[in-house]
Length: 495
Image (cartoon, rainbow, N blue to C red; front, side, top):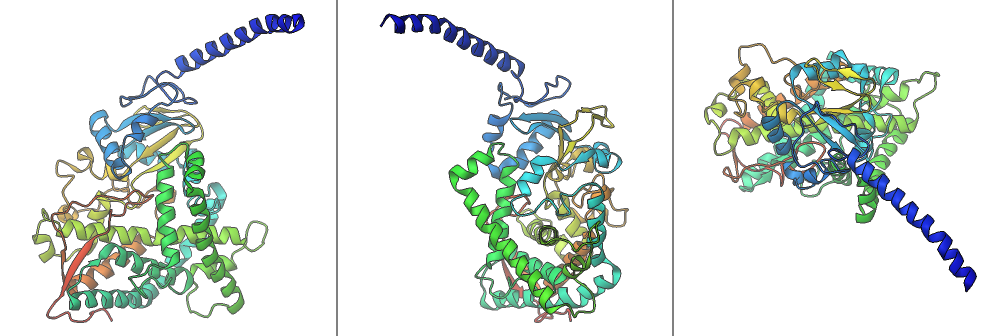
């Protein structure tokens, strides 16, 4: 008993000293990160929104923003704080908003090699795009993969897409629209045009679609899994602790399942092509990649093939599908200028206006490799992120004037198209969208198809469209429309 009492007597002061030391350390850490997230550098030279708390930075502030309002939150801060401001988040660090054309050009073009996608973006879209995909590769590997992918967008291939893939899939789309018109039923245009775009890009990449238009009342597993992973990836960008959150909520198992569906489908296409060969006149992307060699003269691995094909599946259909969905909403909603419909002769300008206000990729970011200074004098330290939103910049009065929020196709009629540093929907610099003209051509084809053949109206013109949480910008709940055949357009005039 005496020995035990002696041990306690000797040990207790040490324990008290340890607790004091830990408490002092905790106080020091809280003081150091009293206004920013742990792991981030204090920046008194940058404007920040109110609501930062010690250690967590602006995490709690972002947590109060509904996922369907996250881009409105950034737009609100832009209007209140200006184009350059920042937030900090645990694990992620500091994110600096750089929403001026000059800063944007510096990051994506002038200082391109000093800004990389970084682990935040790579981990977010890693749910369905591997590290070897064009969207994530850097340096020499990026140049090589971009050169290979660009081969499917040459002039001769363009003619083939117009006279073959677009028309074939366009007629199938027209059949579904015509059936809805004849039956007097509403149809979800967002789902239908998404199915068309996915089958079209399938024809370009693999020589055949995914079967999305076979039965529009039942989504194919590939499409279901793709939509699910886009939503999960979008949420990851704003949940720093998603690696803990997903296992606790079962989302990790969903990611695994949907990944298996996507990779399994593309792997089957790869195996089938190796077995049966390719007989078409123009090579599709799958054939181009199968014939390509790496730096060692070896064929590309299946992981590299799948990563790049999945990248193009996402990029190749989301732009067109969402641009056309938002365009139709802006044209037909209750407050729309009805004269636009009657003078719909410059379809590309209507599509570009939709992309300006509702870009398919509403927010992007890069991580700084070496300390840098932006054109406006803002310092960016290595490891910090810079981020910009096409959603915000497309609605900026300082960039587009006092009528920035108006859907106004005539804005660019008879004038030079806007600088790529202002109109950022197709990105810029070395990573400018490789399929930009492909997307515009496809959109023009469908605009002509629809408005030559049908009179279209929204089922509920007074309903305000909002976006769903996703990596891209789909309309929440879809877009229900009703159609009536034009007297001189009973059948598609595209042949």
